[in-house]
Amino acid sequence: MKISEPMQSLRDALSVRRIDWEDKSDCVSRGSSGRYVIERTLFRSGNETISAIYAYNEDSCGRYGLTYGWPNMVEVMPLDDIDYVDPRPMTTDQILECIIA
Image (cartoon, rainbow, N blue to C red; front, side, top):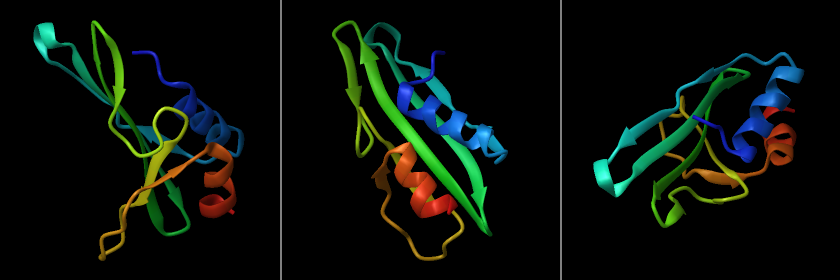
């Protein structure tokens, strides 16, 4: 599966900074109706596990985004908070400034 430009940009930036990340992506076939793709990258920032997601449906007519900020941003949220936090659409630069800094 080819990774989207926004997700690849994030992964490259994390790797350059020697921040470990995990690929938790998945793809579900919907038969003749196409497929559901979720690109997920998990990484640590301090004591937080951060989830970055880029998800879409793909069929014979094209791609349809399912995440905030699609197609130019990834959807980002902490996973360790007890309180639910809405995901935020962010560019790689915003992630580096706000979360990793």
